[in-house]
Amino acid sequence: MKFLLLILTFTFGVGCKEPKAKSVPDSNSAFDKLVSIETPLTFNSNRANHYQTVEFQDTVLLKKLSPDYPLFLYGKIPFHSNFTTLIGYRADDQATPILFTFDKQGKLIHSHLLYETVVGDMGIYTSNHVIIDSERNIHFTDSTITRKLNEDESDEIPGTDSLSVINKKYRISDEGIIKRVD
Image (cartoon, rainbow, N blue to C red):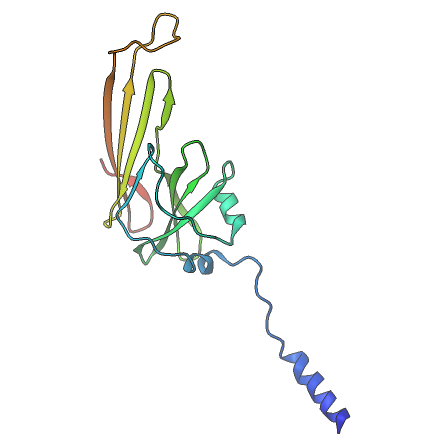
Protein backbone atom coordinates (compact mmCIF):
# COMPACT_ATOMS: atom_id res chain seq x y z
CA MET A 1 0.00 0.00 0.00
CA LYS A 2 2.80 2.41 0.92
CA PHE A 3 4.56 1.45 -2.28
CA LEU A 4 1.46 2.21 -4.40
CA LEU A 5 0.99 5.55 -2.63
CA LEU A 6 4.64 6.43 -3.27
CA ILE A 7 4.32 5.58 -6.99
CA LEU A 8 1.11 7.64 -7.37
CA THR A 9 2.66 10.62 -5.56
CA PHE A 10 5.78 10.46 -7.70
CA THR A 11 3.85 10.04 -10.98
CA PHE A 12 1.35 12.83 -10.45
CA GLY A 13 3.62 15.07 -8.40
CA VAL A 14 6.38 15.22 -11.02
CA GLY A 15 3.99 15.87 -13.92
CA CYS A 16 2.11 18.67 -12.14
CA LYS A 17 4.90 21.08 -11.34
CA GLU A 18 3.97 24.74 -11.57
CA PRO A 19 5.93 26.73 -14.13
CA LYS A 20 8.69 28.86 -12.69
CA ALA A 21 8.16 32.62 -12.69
CA LYS A 22 10.31 34.69 -15.02
CA SER A 23 13.07 36.53 -13.21
CA VAL A 24 12.54 39.65 -15.35
CA PRO A 25 8.94 40.44 -16.33
CA ASP A 26 8.11 41.25 -19.92
CA SER A 27 7.52 44.94 -20.57
CA ASN A 28 3.72 44.84 -20.73
CA SER A 29 3.25 43.03 -17.42
CA ALA A 30 5.82 45.31 -15.81
CA PHE A 31 3.97 48.37 -17.14
CA ASP A 32 0.68 47.07 -15.73
CA LYS A 33 2.17 47.09 -12.24
CA LEU A 34 3.21 50.76 -12.40
CA VAL A 35 1.09 53.38 -10.65
CA SER A 36 -1.05 55.66 -12.80
CA ILE A 37 -0.33 59.37 -12.52
CA GLU A 38 -3.09 61.88 -13.15
CA THR A 39 -2.54 64.99 -15.24
CA PRO A 40 -1.78 67.85 -15.24
CA LEU A 41 1.89 67.24 -14.45
CA THR A 42 4.22 70.19 -13.91
CA PHE A 43 8.02 70.29 -14.03
CA ASN A 44 10.30 73.26 -13.42
CA SER A 45 14.06 73.03 -13.85
CA ASN A 46 14.57 75.58 -11.04
CA ARG A 47 12.77 73.48 -8.44
CA ALA A 48 12.87 69.91 -7.24
CA ASN A 49 9.77 68.07 -8.38
CA HIS A 50 7.38 66.49 -5.92
CA TYR A 51 6.68 63.21 -7.74
CA GLN A 52 7.76 59.96 -6.12
CA THR A 53 9.71 57.37 -8.08
CA VAL A 54 8.51 53.79 -8.15
CA GLU A 55 10.40 50.53 -8.29
CA PHE A 56 10.56 49.03 -11.77
CA GLN A 57 11.82 45.48 -12.03
CA ASP A 58 12.96 45.53 -15.66
CA THR A 59 16.38 47.12 -15.14
CA VAL A 60 17.55 45.84 -18.53
CA LEU A 61 14.85 47.91 -20.22
CA LEU A 62 15.75 50.99 -18.15
CA LYS A 63 19.40 50.65 -19.19
CA LYS A 64 18.40 50.35 -22.87
CA LEU A 65 16.19 53.44 -22.62
CA SER A 66 18.89 55.56 -20.98
CA PRO A 67 22.35 54.06 -21.51
CA ASP A 68 24.29 57.15 -20.37
CA TYR A 69 22.37 58.10 -17.22
CA PRO A 70 20.47 56.13 -14.58
CA LEU A 71 16.72 56.27 -15.24
CA PHE A 72 13.99 56.40 -12.60
CA LEU A 73 10.25 56.13 -13.25
CA TYR A 74 7.37 58.00 -11.65
CA GLY A 75 4.74 55.79 -13.24
CA LYS A 76 2.45 55.67 -16.25
CA ILE A 77 0.07 58.28 -17.60
CA PRO A 78 -3.26 56.74 -18.71
CA PHE A 79 -3.62 58.61 -22.00
CA HIS A 80 -4.72 56.09 -24.62
CA SER A 81 -5.54 52.39 -24.97
CA ASN A 82 -3.34 52.05 -28.09
CA PHE A 83 -0.12 52.77 -26.21
CA THR A 84 1.42 53.09 -22.76
CA THR A 85 3.04 56.36 -21.68
CA LEU A 86 5.72 56.24 -18.99
CA ILE A 87 7.09 59.29 -17.20
CA GLY A 88 10.36 59.37 -15.29
CA TYR A 89 13.61 61.23 -15.10
CA ARG A 90 17.19 60.57 -15.97
CA ALA A 91 19.78 61.31 -13.32
CA ASP A 92 21.74 64.00 -15.14
CA ASP A 93 22.70 67.44 -13.77
CA GLN A 94 19.15 68.74 -14.16
CA ALA A 95 17.20 65.56 -13.32
CA THR A 96 15.61 65.83 -16.77
CA PRO A 97 12.06 64.44 -16.97
CA ILE A 98 11.48 62.11 -19.90
CA LEU A 99 8.41 60.62 -21.57
CA PHE A 100 8.32 57.22 -23.29
CA THR A 101 5.50 55.71 -25.33
CA PHE A 102 5.27 51.96 -25.95
CA ASP A 103 2.94 49.92 -28.13
CA LYS A 104 0.83 47.05 -26.78
CA GLN A 105 3.70 44.60 -27.32
CA GLY A 106 6.06 46.71 -25.19
CA LYS A 107 8.07 48.09 -28.14
CA LEU A 108 9.29 51.68 -27.78
CA ILE A 109 7.40 54.06 -30.07
CA HIS A 110 8.89 57.40 -29.04
CA SER A 111 10.71 59.25 -26.27
CA HIS A 112 11.00 62.93 -25.45
CA LEU A 113 13.22 64.83 -23.00
CA LEU A 114 11.10 67.51 -21.35
CA TYR A 115 13.98 69.89 -20.52
CA GLU A 116 15.47 70.97 -23.83
CA THR A 117 17.76 73.87 -23.02
CA VAL A 118 18.58 74.01 -19.30
CA VAL A 119 21.95 75.65 -18.66
CA GLY A 120 23.54 77.76 -15.98
CA ASP A 121 26.86 79.42 -16.67
CA MET A 122 28.31 82.85 -16.15
CA GLY A 123 26.33 85.22 -18.32
CA ILE A 124 23.58 82.80 -19.33
CA TYR A 125 20.85 81.25 -17.18
CA THR A 126 18.18 79.13 -18.81
CA SER A 127 15.27 77.46 -17.09
CA ASN A 128 12.53 75.25 -18.49
CA HIS A 129 8.94 74.91 -17.34
CA VAL A 130 6.77 72.05 -18.65
CA ILE A 131 3.11 71.18 -18.19
CA ILE A 132 1.58 67.92 -19.45
CA ASP A 133 -2.20 68.25 -19.62
CA SER A 134 -5.01 65.70 -19.85
CA GLU A 135 -5.40 66.23 -23.61
CA ARG A 136 -1.88 64.79 -24.25
CA ASN A 137 -0.44 68.27 -24.82
CA ILE A 138 3.03 69.20 -23.59
CA HIS A 139 3.48 72.93 -22.98
CA PHE A 140 7.15 73.94 -22.90
CA THR A 141 8.52 77.34 -21.83
CA ASP A 142 12.19 78.28 -22.09
CA SER A 143 13.24 81.39 -20.14
CA THR A 144 16.77 82.62 -20.74
CA ILE A 145 18.49 85.50 -18.96
CA THR A 146 21.74 86.68 -20.51
CA ARG A 147 24.16 89.18 -19.02
CA LYS A 148 27.09 90.81 -20.74
CA LEU A 149 30.54 89.96 -19.44
CA ASN A 150 33.37 92.37 -18.75
CA GLU A 151 36.29 92.60 -21.16
CA ASP A 152 38.31 89.73 -19.69
CA GLU A 153 35.12 87.66 -19.20
CA SER A 154 35.79 87.24 -15.48
CA ASP A 155 32.52 88.77 -14.27
CA GLU A 156 29.07 89.88 -15.36
CA ILE A 157 28.31 93.55 -15.97
CA PRO A 158 25.47 94.68 -13.66
CA GLY A 159 22.36 96.05 -15.34
CA THR A 160 22.92 94.30 -18.68
CA ASP A 161 20.22 91.66 -18.21
CA SER A 162 18.32 90.51 -21.26
CA LEU A 163 15.36 88.11 -21.10
CA SER A 164 14.05 85.89 -23.87
CA VAL A 165 11.10 83.53 -23.60
CA ILE A 166 10.27 80.76 -26.06
CA ASN A 167 7.05 78.74 -25.90
CA LYS A 168 6.52 75.44 -27.70
CA LYS A 169 3.66 72.99 -27.73
CA TYR A 170 3.89 69.27 -28.40
CA ARG A 171 1.17 66.63 -28.61
CA ILE A 172 1.19 62.88 -28.19
CA SER A 173 -0.65 61.50 -31.23
CA ASP A 174 -3.12 58.59 -31.20
CA GLU A 175 -0.19 56.45 -32.38
CA GLY A 176 2.02 57.46 -29.43
CA ILE A 177 4.33 59.77 -31.39
CA ILE A 178 5.32 63.04 -29.72
CA LYS A 179 5.14 65.85 -32.28
CA ARG A 180 5.61 69.59 -32.11
CA VAL A 181 2.34 71.32 -33.02
CA ASP A 182 3.41 74.98 -32.87
